[in-house]
Length: 185
Image 1 (cartoon, rainbow, N blue to C red):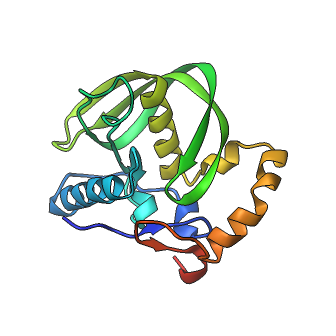
Image 2 (spheres, rainbow, N blue to C red):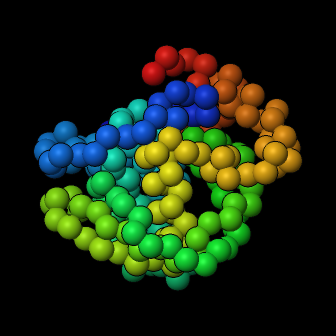
């Protein structure tokens, strides 16, 4: 397995819509395994393929290090589709592609999705709380949406300087990154 560089704010790939996966092959399995390795190395709980520069509708999730989720089994989620959501909840979010920027984001509290697992079998999943939030955050990534897009103009303005630094590659993190300034993807 390999630790992949994570593309940061300003990289064009983060604003692109990922393409559906037609079948699980060695490339998709390797991508999933490398995404898990990358996510864990960066101390994340979710990662979308677009964040590592791949335009495939694949996300990985592992919330087993969060409170009350010690028995959670990590998920590889392929071609996720939100089929129902309800309730609203505001919680602080962050993102591995936008290091050190955190802010309150309102999202649905309950979500139901369908997806293909790593065996390309159909799965239906209902989620609440942190799992629902991670799923919505990562599915947003597959659609070219960042958590910043859910912020008010005032919230965004408060992060303007931090975002300029991230885009210019003026960040220090414990995982490999490719800054927006250095890619033409």
